[in-house]
Length: 423
Ligand code: IMO
Ligand code: MG
Image (cartoon, rainbow, N blue to C red):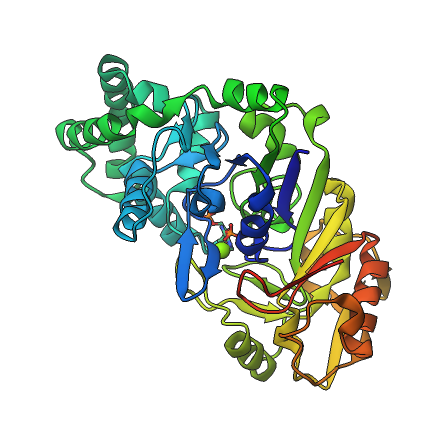
């Protein structure tokens, strides 16, 4: 069974926890897009882990983790993550971690450019500043440096020189900045290359052969449907296909090999960074939910914006993502509320929108239409069976399911590994 897990909102849906649970029964876990902008949290007992580039399944012994070709790999960030785990007693071997030869490498100038471009914009995106956008841009404009290039000093040298020639001019003329010296970057990246070499291979072949050998594969999505470069709230998005389509191009595994798509959503909505957010709370409510849900970015520590569950968004994500199942995360965060609102459609200039409107003006001006559901106002963290949930909590879940049109099969009611209801 080959499963894809994606986020269906603006990221931070709790994919890390879901993947950690699902990975128990799979052989291979694959990241296929994004980079160190991701922040996937897994809590095991007193231990708290945040993964940025490594697949969340790295905690499970004997499972293979793959960083696919669609990922942009920052070798510095990756090695720091690996060293951090090693210090906590988790050793990673080349048998356990595989990095795609054709994945693109995040360079120091990508990180700098990410920040400079943000400063220059009138309307900032609020990126994570990890160089993700500029690295994907280089990939598409065909001047990117891939893992395999890094493994060959002659090729790397030529490509780096070429890049610096152009980029240093750009840094000087557009931003009035000094630019980069070749030697420093060359030596730094050659040292990374020596350390990463044992892990680098053709991961598309590896994953396809694993599938041929009847192994099961879990594809770990990063970010969420509305951060997708094509289907998201453009331009307030990330630079990759976060939706299920990204699996095929980002791992080299054909869509025909995917058996199931599970999407994670929060029982409410959050967003980090700028951009439209129709169901965003007022200040007081936001403070309350942010504190209860510990809504601070796992990568940048920024306070997350919070709002009601938006079924216009998730319904659209379900259609474009072909969701088979939905996992509702962090339901317990709503435990104390007297009334819980569910957005069913938007109203803008007298017109009702039940389908996601791509028009920026509509998204910014949309007034959400809500149904109000009574809250259950009792802690649910110790419950492990759906039928034992308070009737009002079950009603809320059933209503969400109806609005999105996808069966809800997982309900998370706490941050620990076992705090989940499987239906
Ligand atoms: P996980 O995998 C939440 C957001 C940034 C910004 C926009 C573009 O933890 O769900 P980028 O640095 O990617 O160019 O920033 O995307 N963003 C995320 N928000 N969770 C993430 O990942 C995110 N990755 C990027 O805040 O608005
Ligand atoms: Mg995040």
